[in-house]
Length: 64
Image (cartoon, rainbow, N blue to C red; front, side):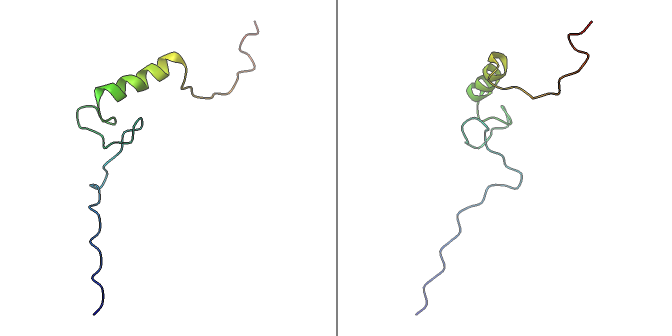
């Protein structure tokens, strides 16, 4: 007798996202984060300089 195929794990909703800080499913109230805590962690990282966006140095910058 052939083995029964295993039931597939429930898949997340189409377009469902994970929290970029902890990986838990995001909540509607704090999207794209799962909670206010993770939202605050992300804000603190931006304000403290942990995150930064690289840019191109202007040749004219600093030369007057």
